[in-house]
Length: 128
Image (cartoon, rainbow, N blue to C red; front, side):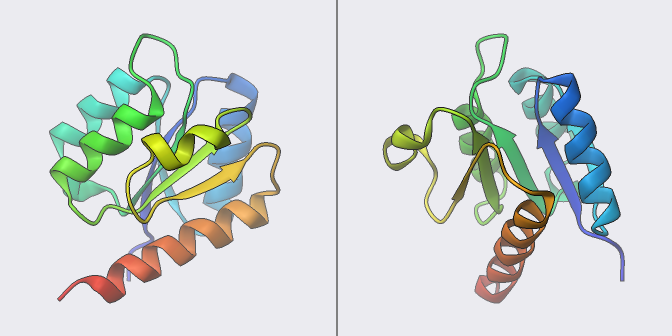
């Protein structure tokens, strides 16, 4: 069975490295987008390529993580969404897509792995 592929959206270089290496070491394939526009373009190009989206909320360029998640769900209605943020937890209930998860920064890679794995498993159970 192929490893699940995650679209990771993060603009901070140091955190990008931690996320990509940590998730790859946990058995995931990782596609990295450095801003919201790039992430949406990748999703629109081939939405079925991704098993889940892990996105920072605050991103440069005018397209935030909330918008990335909404577009992902427009393309794939049950796409697992994990938001990561250092300061937007209070906005999740207003802006987050249903059945998404918020993981506040800082977090351990093991927490990220567990959250993503749980989301993917839950999504698989909901599919007919």
